[in-house]
Image 1 (cartoon, rainbow, N blue to C red):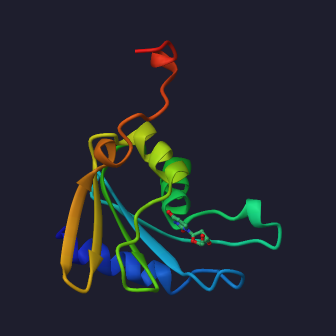
Image 2: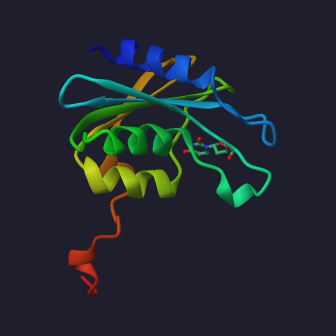
Length: 131
Ligand code: THU
């Protein structure tokens, strides 16, 4: 699976975004170690706090299907700029694939980051004490 292919799956997910409140559509495609791809979109709600981001939609779909090991996630948004994941999504990624790759793109090209590079201080139950 190339980065380009995973980004294209994310774009397919973005087509299904339910974002009537923000108008900001996001798509994500999560590559599991099994080779399977799980696609997600943002799903908004009139009670704004009930909104679910595209990345977490994809991750929760996968985990609920019994898949817990992942290689990478591609994220795209309707504004054509890099769709950096929010802190909550990075925290959820850190739970399952802290060493995995986040794949983003803008009009200049494709960019990759490690999850723990984007959220170096992720919360973990085993490091509650001051380090
Ligand atoms: N959103 C995502 O889907 N992923 C992120 O990482 C950040 C934000 C969505 C949530 C909401 O539907 C819209 O973008 C505006 O915040």
